[in-house]
Amino acid sequence: MDTAGNSAASRDKAYLMHPMTNLKRHLEIEPTVVTGGKGIYVYDDTGREYIEGLAGLWCTSLGFGEERLVEAAARQMRQLPYYHQFRGMGHHVGIDLAEKLLSIAPAGMSKVFFANSGSEANDTILKLIWYYNNALGRPQKKKVIARIKGYHGTTLAAASLSGLPHMHKAFDLPMPGILHTDCPHYYRFGKDGESEEEFATRMADNLEKMILEEGPDTVAAFFAEPIMGAGGVITPPKTYFEKVQAVLKKYDVLFVADEVICGFGRTGKMFATETYDLKPDFMTVAKALSSAYLPISGVMMSQEVFDGISKQSGEVGVLGHGFTYSGHPAAAAVALETLKIYEERDILGHIASISGRLQDGMRKFAGHPLVGEVRGIGLIGAIELVKDKATHESFDPKDGIGAFCQDRAQEHGLITRGMGDSLAFCPPLIITAAEIDEMLSRFGKALDDTAAMVDQKKLAKVA
Image (cartoon, rainbow, N blue to C red; front, side, top):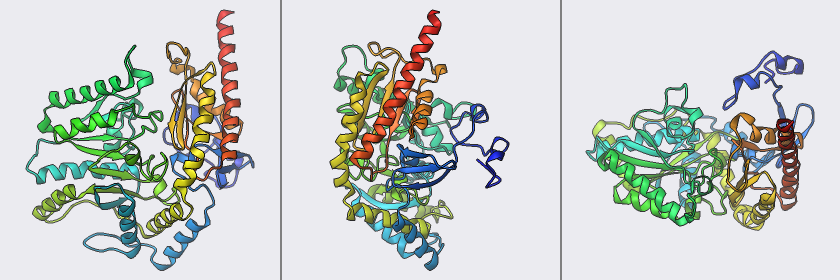
């Protein structure tokens, strides 16, 4: 990042710390400075155009340059640029947004609490789960189970919930009382001869064993993304959530559906909770809630959970939780306008009409010598690169194959996301069929470059 603001030459001397970055490698390369965007495209300070194949960070659902969202923010800033929601205070735009969210939410959601990011929302849920169980006289029922390769944010609690080793190492995480059960990735962890349904049964059985080993009276909740995003865009195996939810119900364990990436049409339904027939007690939403134009997130909860929280706050005297910017008026106005655009432009209908183009187009790469698995649904997916297609053997992480492919994609004008050796696609929801074709064409060039590099390494070893 050019901290001087205008001198490109200074970029080799001045950097900001970038999140989720190999800082040593970061200091050895020049950063890409994005200066503008329009539709699904962004532009850097040299004038180069890129297809933003990951919608920023899974979030810019309406693309770049949506004037209605800019105007919504400006109108609200002029009318009421800020007010809080503490001690019974409120404002119309925050109330309207809560009512709108609940009107489109899956059945069972009753109340909304606003925060500023998915991380804050998941932190909030963890606190509320503990608060709720105290209200019910269950002070021991506080442990929480998440999943290996799951991602729930980067704050202290949210990073602990996330099941990615690099988010724990050297941070002294995870926190005590947060456990991780199996990653339900059938391609990677299914046994020989085991069907998807049998794999799902094994995953649910292992979850039940963990609950029993810990003691059902100590396990409070289970956190899960309907589709595991940053862990590799891992879609659930057949019958997985049906079987997992039965286990949770059996032991009175709350279910938290993290819809931060999947919510607002990404899977073809308004929420992935509907796509996979989930019945959560809490839902986390963010990202596409405002098309990322301003930071805002939400925690939705059932009436039963809210009643318990309300009871406890009556005994304590106050619910001692909140953020200065919870439900910020400008962010709420942008979110409300975003939801209006989804309806007026029939975004769900648009996704239904073009999602097959993305999924079929991705699957055309299945025969490529480097491609092990292609997975996805709606307008989200991933292509996993492997060393051996027959055995599913992965490349050595030190080879950086996924990172190389990501870099080559950028050279060809496509921004994607390498998660290990899985390359993710999550374009703005407004993408057209022709733009999908162009996005995949650019990826194909990067894939061929990667294959050529791998072949050269093989020849070098033989020589």
